[in-house]
Length: 387
Ligand SMILES: NC(=O)c1ccc[n+]([C@@H]2O[C@H](COP(=O)([O-])OP(=O)(O)OC[C@H]3O[C@@H](n4cnc5c(N)ncnc54)[C@H](OP(=O)(O)O)[C@@H]3O)[C@@H](O)[C@H]2O)c1
Image 1 (cartoon, rainbow, N blue to C red):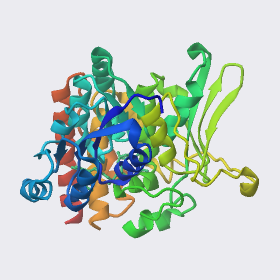
Image 2 (image 1 turned 45 degrees about the vertical axis):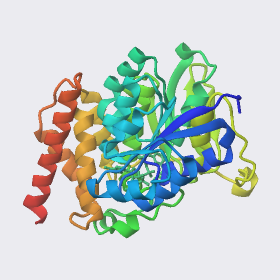
Image 3 (image 1 turned 90 degrees about the vertical axis):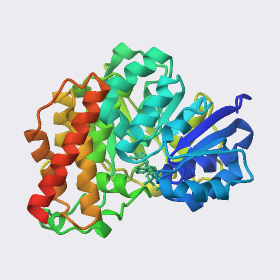
């Protein structure tokens, strides 16, 4: 759009955010050069993407996938590795962080270390190491721009306004598939029930996080670091239609909100193009008259304790949010494998956060070792109770 070609690398190119990012890149091909793609295990799709976008580096997670990918890409001049940091450290100006979970932390830090801008979907990075990542970005002159629709909404509502006039931000959330479920239904919810999100099609982990409301808690932590807010300035409202993506209130009582259809291609294109906007004329328009009404309600912390736990971890600070993210990841995996019930996810998170001492979290090694310890504790907790 602006006439300069942006060199981009995508961490998690085979996932929900990754494939939608490539869709935008394909539409506006003259604005982008794809220099790196990092996948996990879906090497078939990675090979197909690499043939189309011709990056100079790709990565996979498993050693046994190296040779098949090298063979698949033998016509291209493309380095293949098992370390996503190699992709993050390509010559990209912008690294799109779209891994799911803590696996994205080190590659994102490697990108920031190099001074590359990061378009961040992988919220767990800021949950685990928000203060560390932001100070690294400042030091290296790198920007972290959000991709998450709620955070992109806040970004737009803050743009051009006086910062001292800000009263608070309000993150909206659909409430997920169990918004109206009774406690007894939550106790027997299956992965299939929890994966049936009413408004958004996303990867499995974030879909479960949306069902527990942990995802909203993660966004509170993400917002705290991205926009340098006090935790008390960040509120959450449940909004089942997912049309108002978030809101900001100013000291004079004025509210600004950002609205749009629930389609991640819109916030992704904002993050890729900023300050330009890419025209997306073929997306369905937002038809407010057809919708007729929009609804808002307080989140129910009784049925969804994960949101409270995330807030408490933010208040506690130090390594508590890194532990929160690490335990939650183990719990979500176990739930998806039918090893623990849905309601055990927050119970497990709370048990580990209560048991494990919190450290200052200023140093990366401390963050990583606290997260490892929390994972180990979570694994033992599951083994003891659900063997
Ligand atoms: N999807 C959304 O609409 C949405 C909205 C807002 C924020 N986000 C955030 O964006 C991030 C990505 O979400 P998503 O929905 O795109 O997830 P997803 O569909 O599960 O995709 C995850 C991507 O990361 C790759 N990956 C590589 N190593 C991995 C590892 N060790 N563990 C897990 N994944 C690994 C996966 O590779 P393979 O598939 O090749 O294995 C895949 O490309 C998450 O942090 C999520 O919270 C997503």
